Length: 183
Image 1 (cartoon, rainbow, N blue to C red):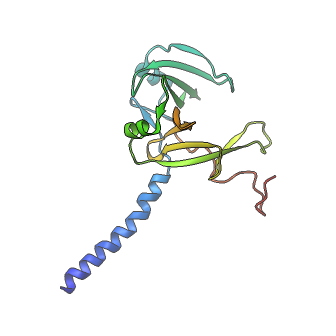
Image 2: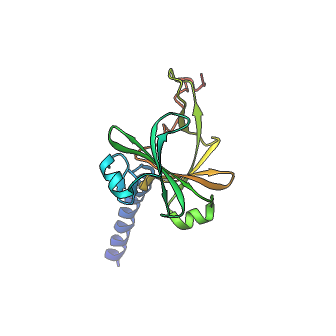
Image 3: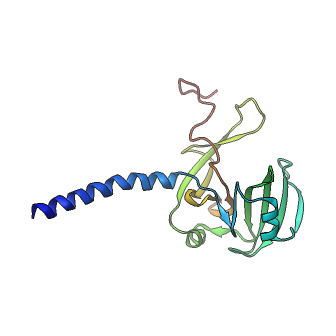
């Protein structure tokens, strides 16, 4: 009887040691994979081979970043904006033809997500805004960090799906000074 109790106790103790690691792994961003293309790794040639000829080539309106647009049906009818940097796939932005409900998106992508809110700051020396995690932030995302996928929630629906290779920004505002006050 003591052997069974001891073995059970050891197994429970071992399982409890594994649980925080599993939760931590869900917090770590992994590069997204779309149709075999890995964000941050796939080359221009691989993108062309997999996606074919783009529907449109130009520059992103707000930033002027070069981009290509493809019309896709996987996982639903959408336009797929492809951003390259240094010859590698930098970002995929999937714009559904029709916005998805939260329920439909979760049914499609799975229940292994976390909801994260973000704010923007412009306190940095450059004129570029930076996102950072903020529990009271104005931007909400459903994130599948272990798969590098973030669903942008706008007015209760999913209007953009991002395939990334790294976090969107720091976990705290870069504007916070040592005393905890914002510049």
